[in-house]
Length: 223
Image (cartoon, rainbow, N blue to C red; front, side):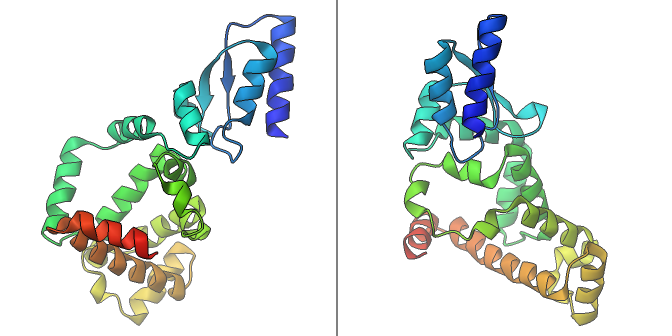
């Protein structure tokens, strides 16, 4: 329905006032390219920009070849690189790399990475830019990609003291309840986050080692 509305709106504007280009929003949805193809075919007017989110800073220049690549499940590495370069500070990246190598990755780092990733767009949209992710469809739990879940994780970490973020092993039953009360979650959800963090720490340690690339391929093949 969104695609049909886009074509109707674009056609009406073009017939009444004449336009030199279109801005197509909601390109972060499942349809991905149907509306773009229809719009160009029906109006004959090129698409100049696309909206990949709900904020003003989530409007991108339209690249037909990149959109075609996404539709075909081939990813969009160029756009992904551009987003990463915009959001990730070089010094921040080097500092994080050092912490990972020294096995000092903590919940503060996890929070910082989540906040940076959120600025880049929806998780589903980002995964669609990675070549080969179509073949892995169904191997990821959709709940893990839910932005609401990420907001919940942020709330839990914000409810911790700096000491707890740096050393989660000190979080006992009473601390867990306090964190849950402060974040509007349950102790079980706090415990789930801590378990996920432990798994992330293990993964970071593997990937930072000599056989990091081989370990990554092994994890993808065994999911």
